[in-house]
Image 1: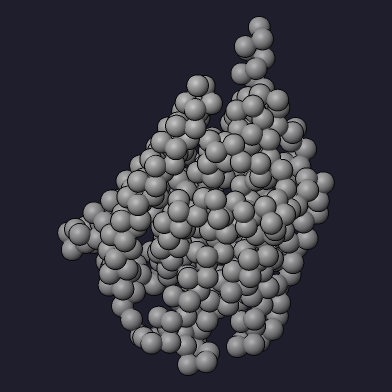
Image 2 (image 1 turned 120 degrees about the vertical axis):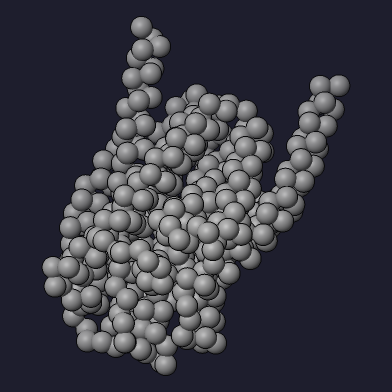
Length: 427
């Protein structure tokens, strides 16, 4: 009877926390990425393509939010999470309304505030689910929301544009539907119970981190963190180019773009990765879990490399090509972004929280993504997005495989040291 009650309780937490976080971040993407459905063809600003300008502008705001999030998310106490999320999403929608109200080209600045408002939401939401025995599957739900949300935001954007809504008002229209739903879901997440004693025994009790503690942690584990942060930077760049310019990329293929093509394709990727990431819950040993996650990162890199090496054959079927690209990118990206640091903290018995590590990784990743997009636009405005993206994915996949191999070797060395210390304590 006790086991049945326990299983029912676990199922409720998965449904409540996992489903709630997935829906919440799905709605966050609707507030953030709907504008990417429009090409803003023929519009320029500062001598650059207008879509590139607003994409970079939003990323700059998002980047600043990630930098601030290193402190804010890692220090935020539970009782302030709900208000932080509510204020953030309201400001995000207000910026989209102003994007529609203020005439082109001055409205580009509104997307800076949109990015600034939404950059810390991931950390606020992750704080509800970290440090639990079920975190692997809960983080899987939150992580895969990125995949389906990206395609959905574009699909909904194309749908609203098909209703003859202006490209400048389309993001605000979608946000007006997403905002109230997001507030309700966040309120329900805020009612989640705290981690149990069993959770704390398995995954370590989580605590806020001050500046000195954050610096000490980075120094202690820098040899492992640096190569992994490099991988995260590169896949963040590749993912952002794919997300923001997928419509532009596919215009160079024989694929006919329909409103919900992206949703159908990303739903399959989402389901597969949800099963893969969720199954990590079966691995109780944190050391084995970390090694498995590194393997998944390598596997994702190899899949991106495969699609690049056989590009000329695969591009004849653009849906297959972009599906395999998405599988590879998100396998590598989410293995690191969702579960890795939760297991990392548990294995090394670190007193702290996931927020610091994730936001450090995100800040560096988005910094390079922003510089990359801006630099590419400055030096080569008129490009074939398909050929450009193909070359980029080939280079990034090869580089990431090298850094993952370095991380494997460092992790193996760290594990040998930990085992040696345990043996000394036993003696």
